[in-house]
Image 1 (cartoon, helix red, strand yellow):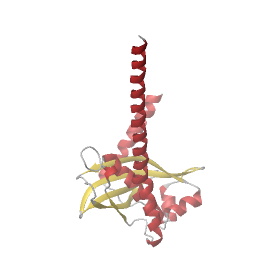
Image 2: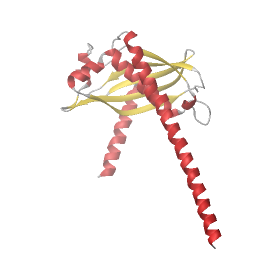
Image 3: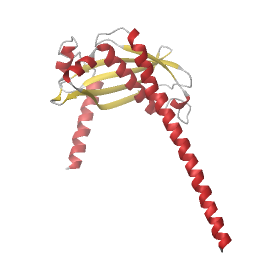
Image 4: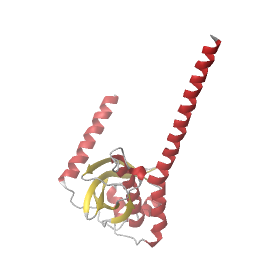
Length: 214
């Protein structure tokens, strides 16, 4: 009985050590994933910024990237969620080059993402070079709308659309007031029907979720 008990303990110990090794590997991959796919790319963009000229807030900005192994899923192409992370880097480049960050600093406001939506047309494969074209599509009385196009070899691979706002301690800053500080008219350019319909559907979902919480 004693020998059997010792054997069971050794088996449990081996299982525990195996689980611990797997956990360490998972943490290492998670750290590498964060460094490679957000902070590393963000730092690269920031280091290049002094040589990147400012743009008008209605112009597009372009950053260039390449697909690395940790961007891939089991199908060996860029995982869908990675597009949203890389769009964040493109949006930061736009905010810096358009001067929006200066307006936000003066107002002591922070950017807040309300909703995002993705359209995936073709795949990006390992080591493939691509560009992210970011631009502001327009704004309404609450939200500003941005588009991030992923382009490879002259073709649009996918699109990420975001609606967001700037909020300070005094509340949400009206987009018309914000863009006026960027030298733009308060009236938004005409937005496509699909964009306004998508925004309306987001509002409907928000109302539904609030209703479920009552």
